[in-house]
Amino acid sequence: MAASVVVAGLLVYIGNWNEPASFVLMVPFSLWVVGPILAPGLIARRSRPTLTHTMCLYIVPSVIIAGMVYYEAAFTPSSSTAALIFIFLPAYQWAALGLLTLLAMFASRYSDPR
Image 1 (tube, rainbow, N blue to C red):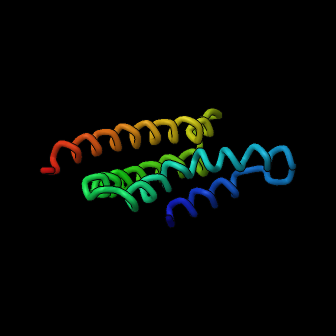
Image 2 (tube, helix red, strand yellow):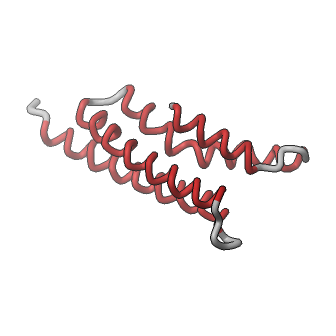
């Protein structure tokens, strides 16, 4: 939860919130960027132990890597395309989250003796 607040604060810091059109575009973009950080907590809250452990193992490296990459893109950009990381990194995080969720659900289904 704290990581999502930090990322949202970073988006507020680097965004142009003075224009109404920019505000309309930044709200869904902020959800796109913060979503992969909040989703594992929501998934882990209401699931089986296997999926909960998988989400806990996913969130730590995901937040650390995302934090380092977002810092690099926002404060020490090495190219003019550094801001594209805010589009592509969440896509990779969503893909990894979906894959891990499916794998954990598959493992949970076949490991529980019922």
